[in-house]
Every structure is written in structure tokens, then in C-alpha cells.
Image (cartoon, rainbow, N blue to C red):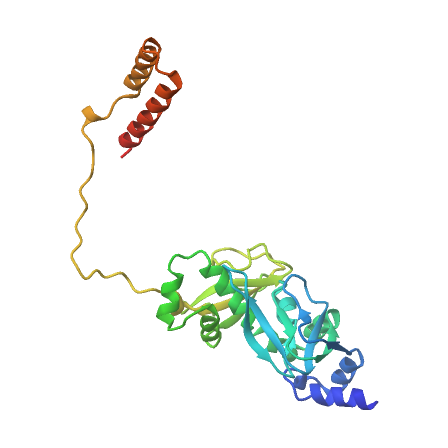
Length: 304
């Protein structure tokens, strides 16, 4: 074992969940690791592409980015230090969702995605670390998707005591839980009503749209594994509107029938006035323009 391999193995042995691997398994893993250097500002993972590898930040710093659902401008969700693992949540969810860029020159230990997935299948304790915890970007994505089209999104932020989606995500993360459902087994009874459950991903790719709220009545395919993330339901409730002054119904506005000309009368007036215009040598197009404006105004008045 050369010095680089020895240093790499010692480094991983102190990082969860690699510290759960046996010495032999860790040695085999380290043998396949490649060190990659990233320049400042260079992407390590991008949300537009499923990662081909897992990257463990070994040296330097990076930034985990989210994108504002309205402006699509990047938001720094977290500053990453050595030991941070990138790419895993995209592979677990089956959805490319992570963007991270090097904020200094950085070096990452990279593990091929195929080997990472094989390790998950072979080591239940190692796999549980990833399958049983929500990721920051995962919660951000689910909140972004749910709040994007809600008219009361600002009220939700205000009630939670936060100013923006990033702060809401950080607050929600500590209260979030994960459930993994398997269509071959009876569904877990742990979907409590204290959480709103969202479809976060699945393997194979689920028929249920990622980001939608989970319908407990919808059966799973026999071979489907579904990853659900439960977000604190209290975050999504807004206070009911309580008026401080009495509210009365506004009077209905309706014009008298005599003042609303019928379409037939409009047509007759149009023809009659058009003929009169010809006799009086008034340019016909001026009459038509005037009558057209009057007809449109009458039609609008009738629809009030």
C-alpha cells in the first residue's frame, strides 16, 4: 500500500458511513478510487446530469447550490468542507438534483456510481445511512416544487418565521423523515399524519411524479421501491383570515333593461346609420368606426 492509498483509506475510515465498512471492504473500495482536482468555480456535480460517480471532498471547499423556483437564480445552500459526500442523493432518488461547485481549488475522492450502488446492495448498515436520512437539496427541491404554485407561499414563510426558501429548507430539514416503501412487502405503517409525505424518487423510476404529495390509497407495483420524504405538516398551515371589521355583501350592479340595446337593434341601427351616411356624404369609414366603438361599449355594458 503506497502512501497515497494509506492516507486515503485513513481519511475515509473517519467519515460516516465509510467508517461502517470492514477493513477489507474499505481496502477494496479504496483500490477503485480516483483523485480528481477541480479549479475554483468548476462544477463537481450538476443537476442537469445524473452523476457517474460519488465525490468525497478531500481537500478545499465547495458550495452546494439550489435554484430559486421563480427566478432560477442560484442560491448557496451550504458551504462544504472536506468529508462532504456529493452525488449520493441523486443516485438514491433516481433524480439528478445536485449542483456543487468548487469555491477554492479542490480535490475529490471519486467512487464509480456502479460500485457505490453495489456497495449499497451488499452492506445494509452502509446503505441505511443514505436511505434513512433526507438530504438538504432533496428537501429544498420538494419545498420549491410545492410552494411554487401556491398563492399563500409568502404566508407560509411568515408563519415559519423565515425570510426565504433557503431558511425554510434549513428549518424543515431538522424535522424531516424518510420512509422507503416496497411493493413486494406490506406498506410501512409509519406514515404519520404529523407529516406531509412527498414522492422523492424510486427504483426503478416510479410512475408517480417526483415532488407530488403521496396518495396512500394508490397501490405500488410489486417491484417498486418508493422513497418518501415527510415534511412537518405544521409548516404548511396558514392562519385563517379573521376580519377586524364586519363584512357585508356588496350590492349587485345591474343596468335597466331599457338602457341595454339588443344585438338586433344594434344591427338595424348600424344599417340605417350607414345608409344615412351615404346620403349626407359623410365618409362611411368614419361612421363605421364610430358605430363599432358604440357597439363594443354596449356589449361590455350588457355583460356587467
